[in-house]
Structure formats: C-alpha cells, structure tokens
Image 1 (tube, rainbow, N blue to C red):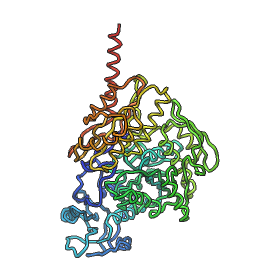
Image 2: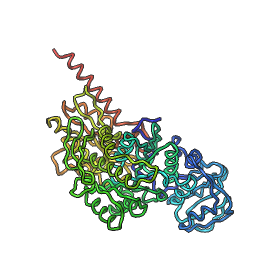
Image 3: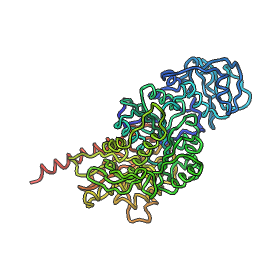
Image 4: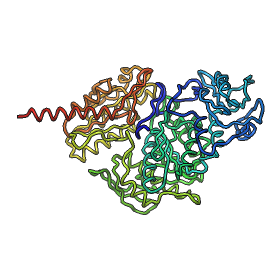
Length: 566
C-alpha cells in the first residue's frame, strides 16, 4: 500500500487538478492505469452487486431520451467505459469525444463478452450488440452503477466538499477527527481512497461515478458510518457524480483557477454551485469568509435550504472569535450555535482554521440529518479529537527536524489565493520564532493550465516573501522557460528580483544551501505528488524527499564546519 500522501502518477496530460474533459473518450484515449481497477472489476469486487435488464435500465434512464436497439431482456452485471477491462456480462459505455469515439472499441468489448453498449452517439447505429442510446452517457454511467450496487450513496451519509482551495484538508480533517471521535469514516479525493489502513491511489480528485459508487459500497460493507469526498468543478460540470445522494455539501471558498477549462470565473463558480442547487444535499455548510460564500449562503436560504455558515464573520453559525499562533499550533475561542468553546489545534494558518471550521460544520450538519441507527460525532468529542489531528500530507507539511536550523514547509498551493494564504502562514511561523529570519519561496506554475494566473502568482510571492526561486512545476507539454517568463512580470512592480532555476531539485537544494539559520523555506505547488510531468515523461520526484536530502546535506556541512573550527 502506498504511504498516505502519495498518489498514482497520471499520464502526462492528467493530474489531480483534473484535466480529463468531455473532449476525451476514456474507452480509447486514456492509458490503462495498472494500479486502478476498472469500473467493471470494481463492480465485481463490490458488495451487493446485482444485475439489471436493458428494459429496466431504459426505465432508469427515462429522462435521458433512451433509445434501445436489440433485445430488452438482455441482463448486465457490470459497467465500464474501458474496452480493455470488459468482463462477460458488462455494459460497455462508448462516449463520444471531440477527438475520437468510444464506438471504435465496441468490437473489442464484444470480443471480451460485453452484453450491450451504452452510448451518447446519435443516429442509427449498426453494432454487434444491443445498444442503449442516451443523451448523456457519463450521467447514465453513474446512475447504472448506483443501481447495480444497490444505491450505496443512499445508505451511507455522504459529504461532498467543493471550493477552489481547502477540499483535501477539510476531507482529511473530517476523516481523522471523526475516526478519533469513534465514527468510522471513508475519504475520497486528491490523496486517494482511504478506509482504515487501506489507501488506494486515484489519478483524479473526483473519479467517475461508477468508481465512487464502488468505494461507497466497499465502505458500507466495512462498517463505515460516514463518507467524505472532494467534488471538483470538473466532476460537477461533467455530471460525473450527479447520481449520488449527498447528505451534506460543503463550500470552502472561490478564487481563480481552472480557467483553462471553464471559460470564465462565473462559469467556474456555477459549476461549484451545482453541488448545492442541482445535487441538493440536505444541508449546506458554507464558509462565508468571502463575498461569494456569503452570497451563496443567502441564496440557499432564500431557496428554503438548510444552511450552516462558518467563518470569522459576525453572525456565522460556527464562528472563530479569536486565535493566536503558539509554539505548538494555534489556540483560540470559537462559538458553535452561540455556545463558546476553546480551540486548540496543531494547525497553523488562517486557511487551515477555515478548513477546521468547515469540519465542525460537517459534524453539526450530520447530527441534524442523522437517521435512526446512524452515528454522528458529538461536538465535544470532535473538538477534543481536533487537538490531535495535524495537516494533510503536502499541506504545510514540515520536512525539518529538531536538529535543523531552518524551517522547511511543502505545500500544494498552486493558485494565487492558496499561495498567498500559505505564505501568510509561513510568515506567522517566522514571527512566532522572533521574526529575525527571512522567508524564501520556491515555486512554479503547471503547464497546459490557466496561464492567466502565472503573473498573479509571481506578484503574490513578490509581496509576501523575502526571496523567490522560480522553477519547474509540472510543465507538461509547455516550455519550462516560457512558463517562467510568464511568471516574472508579476515581480516587475516590486523590489524583489527572483532567481530562475528550472531544475526543481537544484532549486530546492539552492534554497536550503543559501538559507540562514532561522529562515523559513516554503516549497509550493506540488505538495504530496511523488512525480513530475515533463513533456511526455512521468518522472519520480517528491518535494519532501528532495527537501530532506538537502537538509541532510546542510547538517553535514554544519557538522564539518564545527569540526574544522579551532
């Protein structure tokens, strides 16, 4: 099993920030991931798997303009959109893409024993199998999987977390704190699928609906009492998870990201809001620390929805009244529905405190929506548990030890807002230590992603750090130098002049070699990722391992210097 915080290396054009779009037909275009079971295999392994006739599925998909050609009595026992992983009795999903069509792989699926084809291709089709044509194959995929598995999302309290930043940490805090409070909880997102000691890597933050349903069914059989998952804007826009039944929806925040996929910030926000207005969880937990969150909460309440607001704002249902950084984390005071409670947590940074408030909101929300026989963590237990739960892997993760004379933080921040927040948190650590050191930021920007945020990230670093090294992130198919050249204009209005070292390992080593005692070095952008995407190569690379190696080199130099001293 991979360690918590590692993830399956995606192909060169996919990563955990979600690059799979409707322009791709995964049945043919996505390379097989040997570590990830197919949808069909997942369904075969999952508890409660059943069968359904094509007539029953036609009725299930009645709102998707179903058109069945062939016998309606054919029964299917699984569903997959990868022809290479079809098992006998499967329904093969052949989606239409901009560049290719899954229909090109029907013959392969038939040879492997597929019982039928589900497709969104239009017009008359002549295929060797019964064909069920629908208006939205991806939505149908999730719904059929839910039915074959006995609708597990209706049986297990499901929490969906969306927002630009904070999804992973909020999901992490929910799972870890709920477990500490005695509520067995499964988690699915950027860090993979986690249940007890099991960790299954996931190449996407939010997998396809059939895979999510499998994980829900597996968690249900294992005795889990709650399931928390990240809901990316891509998944919501593409309707991957529309078939799921959510008990609680969480909104963390909204800032610029993914504008390489969503045409405007408004469209990006609309995709996020689908979780609340179209998937309709019983209760929404809304962070009201920005104007968008406050507006979303007001609109949900106007629509008659249950809402819990969290944040520092006066009137928030769960409110952080005060906080201060300590040597061990953060201490403060919060109110929950008007009742005051002390807060003690090893977390630092305003953004992490916001994630913690969202976690409390999930607990209170689940308690409001609890069914007979279900468990929700009690508030007192959860507050006690949160004293013990630290940051998620690759989220302000410390790489230095007590023998080191510098502080090294690795963080996944890859948006302007996230980078600003972690730099503020890093500055807070400097101030707590006396404020005499300097803050260095090593960062880059991903290739084949929103180019408009690159100078903005440069400006954030210029404002918040004392020194910067611009380096490679995951350049993918773009020129690393061209990406760096787009970052540099963000520094022009400021006195800081960054160093450009495109070799990321060398950039990290240089930052730590040149740091003075008491400095803080923040390595931003990749966090938990154990790979780097350069061209069509997936290279083994981990910021944390590189930082620890550079720290070891620094310690060795210090020891050698002390021996040479007279």
